[in-house]
Length: 266
Length: 266
DNA sequence: CGCGTTCTTGACTGCTTTCAAAGATGGTGG
DNA sequence: CCACCATCTTTGAAAGCAGTCAAGAACGCG
Image (cartoon, rainbow over all chains, first blue to last red; front, side, top):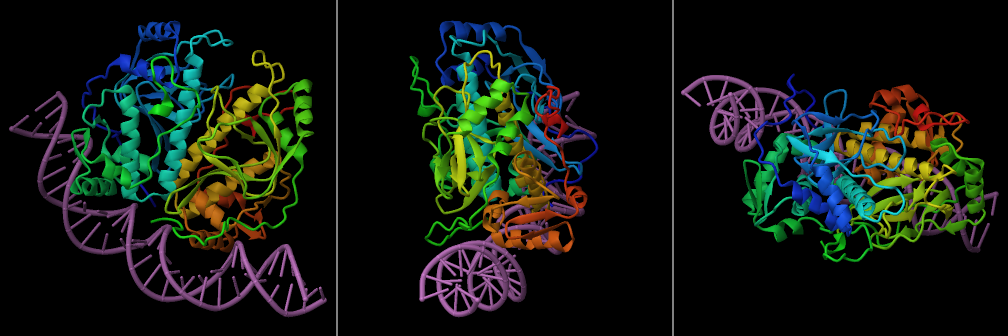
């Protein structure tokens, strides 16, 4: 069937190539773009970021079936939700980038629905929780919108896997990553730092590494992008977007806050 | 690429064959299996169900990008989240069964992330909302767990579409539907009433109707199930389950309530 | 500079799609 | 009660996209 069934014995997930850490401030700023935060809300985040926790690449952050201890904010690095079948097939359910939340649940005694694994070295911190009622800081609203966005990306993944060709899947995925990195990472001149091997991309897109490779070559041949050493450069974003239907996610009707940031404007 | 690109002009979604309505009480009972409800919580649900609203098959219940007016409970009938590409390809993102919630959001001014369409004639009612703090009735907790379950099904869909073969997809999907119907519909002797055409199933599983047909025949030939007129009968559930890895969803660590019902025990 | 990982390439296989048309099925009206 | 019709299901043959296997090249790290 699809995907690698047999893997070498070792945990050959990806290179441990040292990744320059991105700026934690950008991760915090992402939450501010989701919902207007009060000065207090921002300082709560900054306080939390002063007690960072480091996680090494390939480590499991949460495991499926285990109780969720706390809500974390990713300050830098990439993680992914992953599910592994007993014959070795692997599906990456989604990526988690700086500014994204881990364990952002509603129920009282949450249990992790999927395993989450660090793809690179990471820095995380506890998400500040406040007096439940009120939410005067805007943090709860930001977390709620982050959760809605995550749901949006899940639906997008399903459509991608169910109805798009390999070329379309790649294009759609790259545009999604571009959009998300633009929120939390300094994306300049359409250059995206994507610290993933083609095998990881294949596991996310439901393809084989070999086919991801050939498809990426097609995108390069048609001059839509360049890529080298974990850096993807979008050359012709319009052409890339024309391969698929691009829609900016809108998950709330709230108008832009004082600082002008709003998901709907993205 | 995959799926039907061209469709006949009409909205040939599915037959309007009259479906006997399931029992609304079962829909309400489902919520009680998710979290222990107080007597007050149950009666709030029963009150709400006394003001039912009917929705005809094929009608859109919510539309992507439109604000979400209220939270609804499905009392009977099936709906689905759907996304349609501009060349006519269609992906069904998930099914919504009796006892499931619609518009179960956390943020303040939610906007629908996907279109939701009635697949059969439906009966719904407003979900009772209470004073936010406290949740003495257990309803908020039940809604939260319902939301976590929905997330679980999304991850399952992604794995299904990304890494399972056609045969495995069908097996996995049928077992999921079985599990869900068992919660809200009287499933007796492994007989499932599934009011879907093979084309709808194909749009959910990322296959073509023709291939769904052939794959279902394989399942019948190997004596795992029978099916006729919207009724699927599981003959050899163990054999069906052996095609895939089956895992019961566990989304909360809460122990069983007084009535013994808990998601973890399912 | 050497080694392991990752990327690239080629040839071949096969699952799934595509296209087309014939059979069932269920509801409706005569 | 039966004929009719739209919809849905089933079948066959052929084409195609993506997978599989294997080996060589390139890359990055120590």
